[in-house]
Structures are given as structure tokens and as C-alpha cells.
Image (tube, rainbow, N blue to C red; front, top):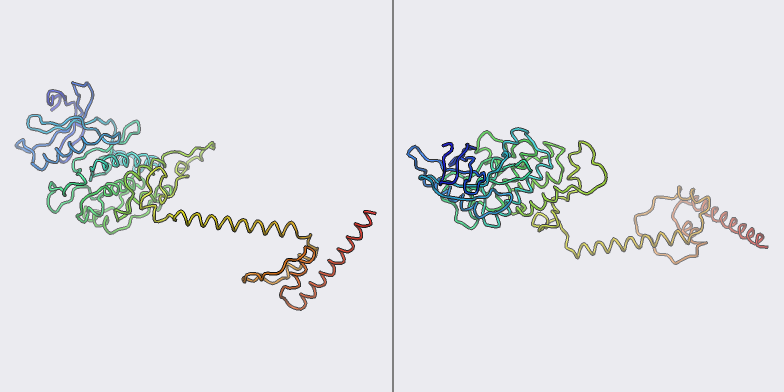
Length: 419
């Protein structure tokens, strides 16, 4: 089919890939003089495509055409050429995330954050148009040389408000078992949180180098999606920043209501990707430097809506104000007490250290209020009222007498000095 001119406009140059129902070609749009990707519906031996495949192909064109976002592959044209349906799309120069992971096994946390932010942003745009992708996986995420990430292949996408699809063979679930949300595994209809779960699976794999739930068969993986708890990413790769690991695990919550929306995830990843401003040089070989200042996942970016993932951990404003006021009052009392005792009390006599060391352990009972005393008598009075053995009282009385004598002598010396 090389150099075939589709619809008298798109010249097929070379094949790029082949999927379940279609093949993708690098092509040239001779009208607009630009490179494009042309997807052709596969046909059977008799040159005819199955009705279900044809309908799925048309739906991909309709759903993708509703989206206009930098992180979603754009659709330019749709039609039929010599009995074969075709779909003309934006040509993305780069490789899929699946190819990148095959080459490198794992990504750096900063790279995973950048991918997560852009895929979540693309999903958020799709969800606002009531489009659910239903097949987010590394093979459907394109990475370009300039760092842009794009979602591809809306072949099994559906509209959120549509009746459950009848295009899937009874007894089968559309999607990939390794990235399938638990609610879909038990036969429920896909909704926006299902895409978020799939993205969580993708990021988990990109960070750890393994699937969330490895299995030898698709059925084994699907069962784990429903029942098993994922191993924390930090146990598999300790250098993963804790906030990022917590974010991924929150996206993998079994209950769809406990997952962030795609918009919330995009906001959090977007904040995570912004290196904190600092004049200090970052430590070498420190993979957590970029993400060190991130908020806990329980407190996502203030620029986005704090959803159910944060509400359960926040105190009401009135309670927070009350606690702050109580803390301020306690601090004021403590400072006031400290100032009163330090500024007004006379210099302690030399024997004070001996008295303190021989005193019994302080009681846990609250102190008994006592009348105010003059500075000269306050310290001896506390000593005389303290409980202790008779010998201790005698020592304290002796200390008192010595202090009094010393005080009298100091007064006489000052009088002589004035004369």
C-alpha cells in the first residue's frame, strides 16, 4: 500500500503500527502539506470489516474529535476510501511509554511526575466532555522529544452518560487486565475514576519497574485488582519520594470515591513538577530533591479543589481557630509567669543548689494557691512549706538563717558605703 493516495489527499508513506482493528501509517496531507498519521480499519479475507469493528472505529473518530487538548492526539479527518474507513490524526514523533519502559525498565521520579501531570490533564479534558478512555496503558501514551505527553487510541472509549456498550463480546471486558479498575473487573460501567486508577497502575509500573499486580494470566491479574493490596512503591524502590508514592497509592484505591479526580491529580502532579526556589545547590545523586517540599497527598495543591481525599483529615476552621487561641493563651501565661518569677525574685543564696537537689520529686497534683508574698520572704516560705523529713526542715531553717544574716550584713555595708 506504499504511496497509496487515500481520498485523493493523504499519501501513505510507511507503516507505523498495527492494532486489533486497525493499522497506522505515516502519511502526507497534500492539501495542507503536512505530515499526518492515517489509521485504516482492517478488513477480513473478503475485504469487509466486522460490523462491531466498524462501529468501534467510527466511535473512536467521534469521541476523539470532541477533544481539543495538548495532551490528547488530535483528529483531523474521518471518512471511507474504497470501502475502508480511515481516520486522520496528528502525527506524534516519538515513542510510546511502553517502548521507553522496555528500554529503561524504570523512570526517575521527576519523569513519572511529568508524565502523570500531562496524562491527568488530558484525561481531565476528556472527562469534562463526558469521554472515558477505558484503556489507559503505557502503549497508549506517547512521549515526544520535546517532553510533551499525549494520550492516543480512543478505540474503546465511551461517553459517561451513555448506556453500557454493546460492542464488547458478552462475558468479556474491554481493556487491559494489568490496568483494569476493580469496579470494571466486577462488571460495573466505566466512569472517570476508572481512568484515574489505570493511570495509577501506569505510574506504579514506571516508578517500580513491575506491574501493580503481576500474574501469569489475565484472570489472575483481574482477581488481584479486586482483592489484593498493592505493595507500597517505597518498599520496592526506597528512593521514591514518600508524597509521590502516597499519591500513586491513593489513585489505586479500591473504592472509586476515594480516588482523586483527574483534575485533582493533574493539579498535584503539576505542583510536584515545580522545583522549589532555592539558592542552595541541590545535593548530588539526591532523587528526592525536586519533590522534597511537596505537600502530603492528604493535602493536595491549594490551586485545585480539595476533594474527599483531603476532607477526612482537615479540622473545621472554628476548631483550628480555637486551638490556635488556646495555644496563644497558654504561651502568654507561660511567658508572663516566667517574667514575674525571674524579674522580681532576689538572687538565690548559695545553698539553693543543695536544697533543690535534696528536694523530693515534684507532685503531679496541681499547686495549692497561696497569698502573694514579698520578694524577700517568698523563697524561704516555699522552702518551709515543702513536705519532707525533719532533717530536711532543719537544713532549710539553717539555710534561711544564713540567708538572713547575709542580707543584714549586705545592708550595713551599703550604709557605710553611702556615708
